[in-house]
Image (cartoon, rainbow, N blue to C red; front, side, top):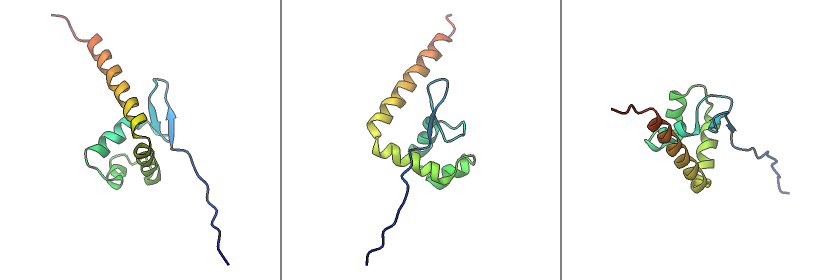
Length: 95
């Protein structure tokens, strides 16, 4: 007799904000910030300490989604970097 286990697959804990950024869960933490911390060598547990508003499951889910969809997320991050640079250039005083 085999035992069947049922489980529910959930979507990543992402939501778009009004500025076009991706936030984690219901927090104000951006995917950009979470991944920057991850790329700087922090473990999910360390990220949870740095961002106590996030639960560990949300952090692992966000990282897992990134690792599975790396090209898409890297493209998103690059677009965000370019947009931020354009905005900074608009406010550079001309001497």
